[in-house]
Length: 413
Image (cartoon, rainbow, N blue to C red; front, top):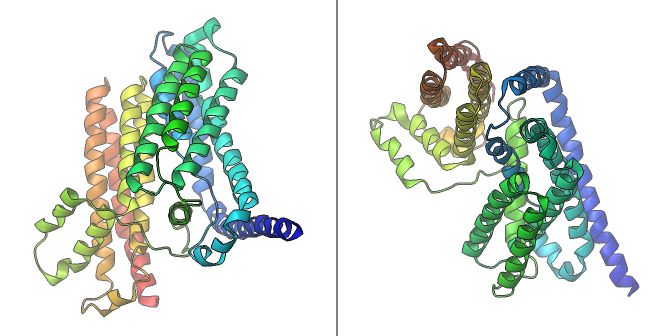
């Protein structure tokens, strides 16, 4: 009995050590982020955003369909998010024999993840609460009641996420994730339009259906492969952000099949000068970088459609373009540590031109979409010039700064 308790304590100590190591590494990267102008720029955007938010609320009619904005903010925060276990590849060998004594390890991971996701969810609720109060007035529900419901729902989501990692079939895991998103899409508008009690009833029904379905599906005792994959995804997300400011520890990228989009490279002329353009286009389209760019573009587009203020709409699209440009800069590092790439009989400096060409093409397509959106949604067509100006500034920065800097870095490697 004492041996079992000692093993459980050792397991919890392993999790604490891994969390401390990751936090120390992240703090080291954050030091470089704080030295840049990024934090100050984001703080300035926050102040400007709050100012325009208050200003727009003063002119907004009380019958405005606020629940669309509430859904855009809260549904992803409720449905997304996994449990940070800090599980790594060797654990399949070294921790597998202790599988029955790892309850303390995973309990700490669950508490840590629940705390982080709860903070994000509460901040998201506080962001949309003034809009909700403005539109509902005296009919608004107490905020503590809504917070209680959202935290309970988030707890259920993380529990389902944990059970989902044990499922043997990938198709079953995908269906589970889809079910979770549908439940969140239904619960948020019900909570804000019809009341917390109806949303709580829906949560109970969904939970019962999930428990019944879970008994009919094959499961592992611990989904090691899924946990390792999710942990790597979480680390990639962190490293991709820090890569905007400094070189970070590389992880192998997640490659996805995108058959139709990948056909874009068939339009390239079959010539050695297009080698790196072909490679980096395939890389961009088949990794998370394209998904990030697409999500940012779609989010900015839909927010611009919903917002009624021309100034706020323009600011959202310009910010979306700026974030996309930052995300695209990480494309250059995707093959930086691929040794066989140096064996190509092509100057390595050609990589810079290929990456910049892809970045400019992507941002140009995005700028055209944003400009057309402003032309159709704003009374003054001059607003449509803002995304084009942002594009020109990005291109100038790429050509005058990044091209020289990246070429110098490659020659010094």
